[in-house]
Image 1: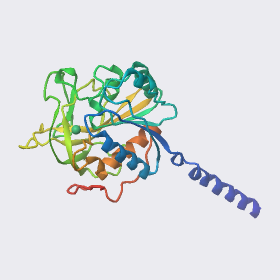
Image 2: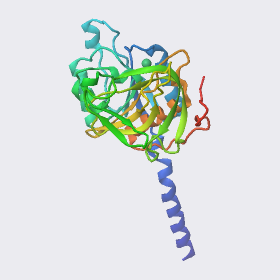
Image 3: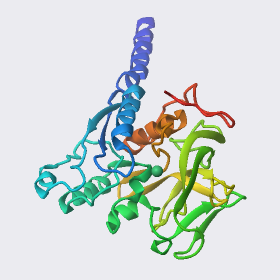
Image 4: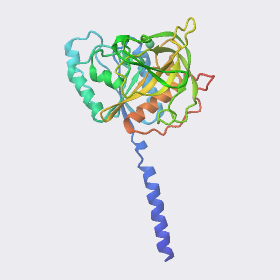
Length: 300
Ligand code: ZN
């Protein structure tokens, strides 16, 4: 009888241990970084993004840059990004409209459950590509283009009508205070309510269809002289569902002389976003060097 009990305990123990050794976390998420054209120094920021993902340890990174600006049609014909098996497409791209076959493949990839994370000026791209504009929600577009969102001082979302309210743009560059708006999301769990983001360019008044936009992080756009902001809490990181897929937009990451992509806050949020859009969860703890309410954290 005792030996049967022991056997039962051994079996239960083995079953309990089994999931830990075959957890989804052991399978790296395949991230395809697409750059190749940008009004920012993508040649400088892309290797930093790549290193950041490799260091995080949850990812397998593939680079797949588009042809250069003004490249001949033959170069575009030769560009065949294959989204099969990709968990996250990380866009560091702001350039020419992709050929229709790639736009269709990309849209189908997201609709079928694929993940996308956009960095900074990537939301400037692709004017008129309806599916892209729908999945991004808020873009660098003129005031008439669509709706705009911000948080008022009571933490309520204000929806500005097309043509009304503040226009799209950005003020000066400075260290901003980020505010965590949804602490229960996989991307933001455990983050401080307020934290400093290292010297960056703060977009405001982004416009778009703004449907199903889930805002995770905002920043106060300081109207002080030299900063020239809106005095509003601007959405900085949000996500939008598209079909079975998820799209995260991260407006941080203007590459200046001090490299905001090296902020520990930017890197934590971006890595978590890449994992979450691919798997639907993210268990990455808040790193010890995460910025605080009064101190930025820079990873040289
Ligand atoms: Zn910029």
